Image (tube, rainbow, N blue to C red; front, side):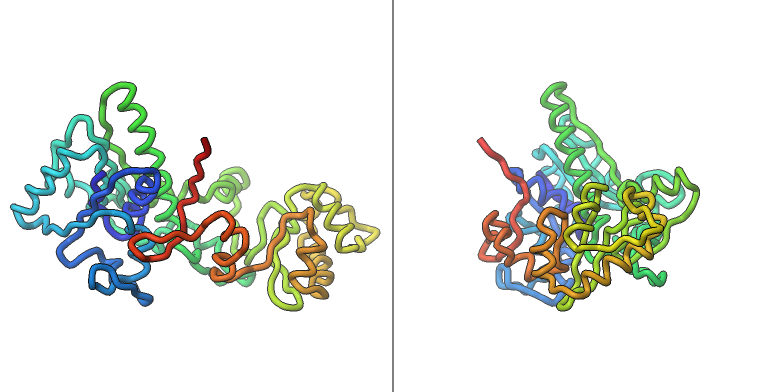
Length: 336
């Protein structure tokens, strides 16, 4: 596989396929990928200080540096393309065709761009935060007072990488069956809209825009974080049966005039339900709550350090090391 992409979505695609066994050669500009400087924190690779950001998606790849504006370097990359099964690139629409077309007949070429190769915005670039804003994702992410926020990771880049890797695997399967390559095109924009899932469908069906809700869910109650004596704790009731168990576990006293046995009724009375649950939860520590709510989906709001050091993470081997640098392991698990 030849990884000609930059920043996150493309490199993450290549990283996913590397995790599955692909031999990835990465080509960067002579000055390196921009994300090498996206720190601190930094770590040392080949006597160079490199941002942790870069290492999150590029460890385990062979890396060379070429200047595509230099004819000799361009010819070398064209030769690499002729020898590759898969090529991933995220140059602006038209640029890769100018440099590299025609592509090898049996190659699988995956182009990733901000808005795709057609449409009125096709010439525009865009980072993840721009897509979070324009796609509407940011309009539903934030506190209960309407103050918006971005998701804490570049979730649209990540989603695009997941879609791209799936598309590449499907194209590889087709090539095995039919002997033909493929030209794939994925955009952050399309993947951002797909990522809205139920929220987009709610708008399509109801015609009403959702708003920021903090940690609450637009379609489920109770399903949010509550304050405890020593932190925050999430309770996620996804069925009416789980609601019954929550009422029993927390000994909730339902107002006589209220019937909250069905989720739709609880959504309608969201404020009253949340106030009742919060009043009970506020009297307990997070550990006490987790013990009491053993049969109900729940969890303390952990820091990332707590999550990485969780006994479950350790037992499942979720930390690995490549080239002497620790990182999160691949989530893929294969069993004979």
